[in-house]
Length: 97
Image 1 (cartoon, rainbow, N blue to C red):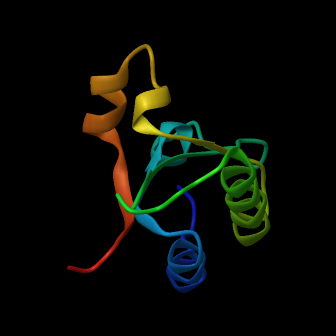
Image 2 (image 1 turned 45 degrees about the vertical axis):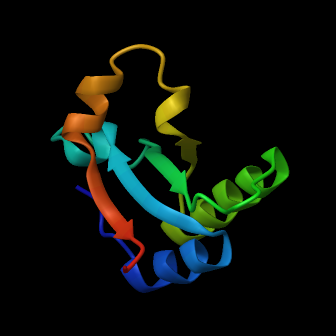
């Protein structure tokens, strides 16, 4: 399992108007290794006007924080196994309030 830099993640989530950030996939399983990427789901604040460029920038900054490749998606982008992923995902950031 991976060490999660919570303070750095909070800074990025505040910067990019993230409501919730969730970790899923191999980072939560025993098969996670030095070559594994980090799978994250992001939910933005309802009032956020997020573009694809914003999402790419967040993905790039998260890759720097985790020091490995990050795959970033939204719950809506999950076509297959959505419920399974959402049920197993671990929230690593949630906006207060």
